[in-house]
Image 1 (cartoon, protein in one colour):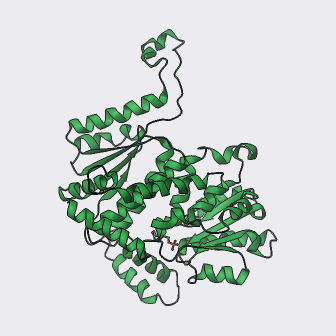
Image 2: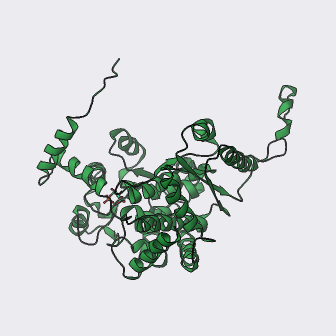
Image 3: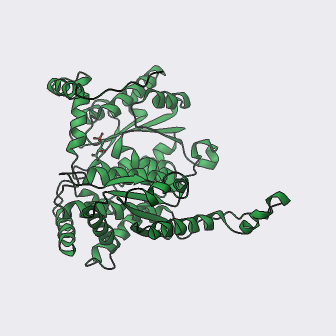
Length: 430
Ligand code: PA5
């Protein structure tokens, strides 16, 4: 095991040194682009910011926002928020997009349109809808409201930036979508909401130097996680359950799921990421985890310090049997729930990894982002899987282009229809 993991980390360092395609995320913490901070200030002048993007161009934005901002951020007053309201238009779902349109004044909104390829159908479709609403509000030139983040040269978004002269940033050509959160793709909207993006980058950079100094498996948490994933996969445990004990890390789990699934699901290999939130999922999935098939590795993530909320003494005699809770904190209870659940799984001989973070702030979030990107990349490179491509995703994109009538994708449409016709349909209509 040590041999293949060393091979993975050597390949990673070499790829990063050579600035090979895919490896550019390794240097993102140390190289924020020029104009980043002044553009954040520009965004903060609006009433609302809408991030238009999908996959790696949206999940990281939601992850940072839910980890570091107030859970009801948009419902706070402007003074309490300090920044604009924030919305994400990722799915091409008319309900979600219409709901955002209901909430914004198009003229007082900044639209951050992010797409590495500059052509993803869902993103472009949402972009057209928001552009139309902006034009319908009397804004003649979109350049005052729209900012694009895309490839330096390719794609419709780059052409749009050239045609309209709107603000634009590059997704570095060596950085893939799901590894782009520490580029302008993720940083601009985070900064607009008041997140300390300097600390985010510093945390990532500190994790980079810490991991780069480690040698061998023991004492290196990234290698321990990569080794465990590979070991348990070989034992038939091809599901990794990502279980943070923090509601604020809910979207972090979704960001991790994309990173892990798209990077490692290759050549018949892959471990399926499964999101579970402590303690909520103790009351939903734990029965399966403890007594269902032994096909999962569990990763607990527990902040070792957090804000606490003390439980008062019960003031009704009918609640006397709750007196064991008196004076204890909700946060302390959550910590003990994590311990209890991990112990219950161990009792059933289920494998558990336990990752502690000192506190959930911008610095440690940045560190965690880098940590999981590193583990994912090393795992893929160790197994000879390219952790930076996504041919399965591209196939679906081509079928969509074809079915939507995009020129040049006619044979993809025919192929999609042919495969679809072999699917067994079930009807559950009332
Ligand atoms: O990781 C990836 O490259 C993908 O999941 C992309 O993030 C996703 O498909 C969106 O692509 P794009 O940023 O090109 O619009």
